Length: 147
Image (cartoon, rainbow, N blue to C red; front, side, top):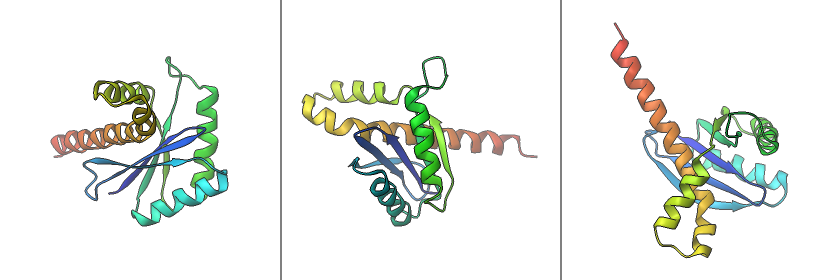
């Protein structure tokens, strides 16, 4: 099952896609934001190109798990995307992915400019890998409890 992950931002959209088996996440080139209609069209094209069966959109909840101004914008974006694609679009908690992405990039020794260009892609990749690992754990747990 192929899954597309989106790290939605006001200037850029980070993207990652799973392999066909739904095991690993690979980053895709970051999509610079233009007009909403153009962004939605490009994402729709990606779901077709990669035969995506599900889209997950990072939901930037507050530290306590509550809604934020940005999470409301993300929810509106996800709703518009749902109307454009033929697969489910789900929101997924992404509270720590940007922090993890920045830390990993900083530790890699990349220059600030290269880190800024990569952070959205890395955040989307971390979001997706977390989701894929969750699905794998659920399948393992369910297989262990089957009669």
